[in-house]
Length: 437
Length: 143
Ligand SMILES: [Zn+2]
Image (cartoon, rainbow over all chains, first blue to last red; front, top):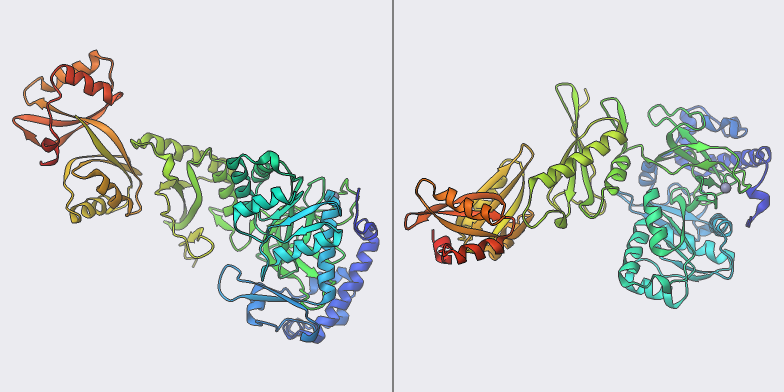
């Protein structure tokens, strides 16, 4: 099994815990001294850095939130002098003000190391040619994958995103063996490759995809259309960027690089740490970062962890694919519903009969929750002589699939193509009209 | 006579039918025949119009799915059994009637009907053969 750093990646649990504890204590001391927001929260809890003696005290520490990054925009959460910050990245988030994160030279090296571990693991070597089709710029995707691939010694094509025909031509001409991009773009590339009939001109072997949620069905579709093995990479710029956790060859979830990141699952309502295996909100603490350390950062991603021994030999904990966002979770008639579950059902609807645009409308009428899902038909779904029966059949089929997946019934409405409002960027998926008194 | 029919998908929301007919009226397009089939949830509006291509664009601009298909327009003697005679001809020739609806108005004592058959071209050929394909475009569109 190829390792980038076998000693770290396969470090016995006890030893790993010791390393984490040492690093956590140092991080807390440093943040208390240099980050005003953290110091205030510690003081509010009557906590001193000395109270944190190791990872067993992690749960005592205050949480941090995306809102903090907005409140202290742009550099208010940095823990080092600006002269030591060699790079910043920024993201728009989904709403409002941008957030900014920073890196020292050592941080960039640590990041490259995390990503390189993944390349090494899946079998990428210095003989490979890696096309990085994540965007380069303020977004962390392009630079993150780029640095990891270089660290392995692979040849990097810094393609960035967009211009699909040039992407495919480059892949063919430059004999790229690895492609890195978002899964939705990989789907699109695959469709274009099939349409152009150039699949057999590709040299691709592996794909690394991340930065947005994707399903096992999407994985299969990408693997088929590009004739590759597809791997999942997880990360967020607030914590570092892509590479916080990566799939290994066994694809049994993603190893969180625990020498750098401590991970917890909490109940998003109460903040309590949940026992292993339970589903809840993912929380990260970076223990090996200088410029922008985060302590108990609430990702809002919902997933679960498992410590079972992985066949690859790595001892680092495994996180399952996030199944949704805690700020997206709806409780409808007492049942937890994630929009991602609905999306998954809709993606499975055959052919091109519906678009991936949908909208969930929840309301409360006579003390009972109403739950409606509006689904856009595609223009091509309707025959030339539109027949209501076809529409009703489709509605019934989606209704049944939703009920069996969610455990509760939804009223499905098929609506005209492009009739669901698209805000700039992400569509507004959920309208919750319930006023809880 | 074979004519172009528009089918329009309507979500059963208040005002949708009005929006469509209003937009057509504003553009000076006459509706010669109209049929609405609906359930509690959905409606399909079928239209025969003076300018189907232009109407299609206008309706489409409302963000509504609109499709075109060919149907048959026939003039039926407005006497008892007039309709049955026609249906017998179709039936004898193995043609199924999917649906039919009436045009507003009539031509020289005959009722104008829009008929959707399992095979529109064959239906027209048979009517021609029997001398029953007796309509001109102006009969339909000037109503
Ligand atoms: Zn593994």
